[in-house]
Length: 295
Image (tube, rainbow, N blue to C red):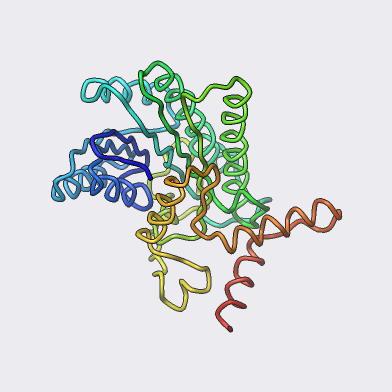
C-alpha cells in the first residue's frame, strides 16, 4: 500500500472533478498537494477548500497545452518542495457532441492540443524531473474508456485518449527495455464520472472557437439518478477510491468501470480479429447499462 504521508503530488486539472477528488483524498492521507488548472477562480476555490481541511496545498494557474507553462509550474514547485513523488497527469477537455463530418479544425486543434500534446508535455517534463531526483517517481495519466473503441460524435476526444494510452504504454515499455525503474507509468481509463467535463467549452480559448458551439452551461446528470444510471455514472468519490486502490496494487492500467471497459476491450478485439464492424461506444455503452438496469 502506498504511504502518501509527507510526500508531494502534483495534480493537473485539480480544480474540480477527478483531479480535485484525488487532491482531497491524498491530502487526507497526509500528502502535500499541488493543484494546477486553467480556471483560476475554480483553482483558488479548490485551494481554499483544501486549506480548510488542513491540507498543505498550492494552486498554480496552468495551461497544459503551453510548454512554457509547464516550465513555469516546475520552477514554482521547486521553490516549495525538493522532491515530487507523483504527477497525476489528469487535465483534459471534452468537445460538445458533433458528427465527425461537421467538426472544424478548431475543434480538432483544441482537443488534441490539450488532451494529447498537453499530456505529452506532462510526461516529458516530469520524467526529466523525476529522473534527476534521488527518489523514484510515478506518473499517473488520465485517459478514458473512450480510448478503447470509436465513440460517435466524440471522435476527437476518443482519438486523443487512444493516443494518450499508447503514449503512456510507450514510456513504460521503453523504461522496461532500458531496465530503468526511476519512473513508473500508469494510465487511468475512466468511464462516466460525475464531473464538469461536459462544460469544457466554457474555458475553450478564443483561437479555437467555433461559431457552431453555444457557450452555455450544461446541467450534469447526477450519479444515482435514472438519467445518470443509463450511462453508468458514478460519483467522484467512488472513482477516486477505485483509482487509489489500484495504484496501491501497482497496476499499470487503472479502471473506474472495469466491467464496461472489459466488455469494450473484448468486443473491439473480437471485431479486429474477425474483421467485423468496429464497436461504437455511443451504442454499446448505453445498451450495456440498459441491460444491466433490467436485471
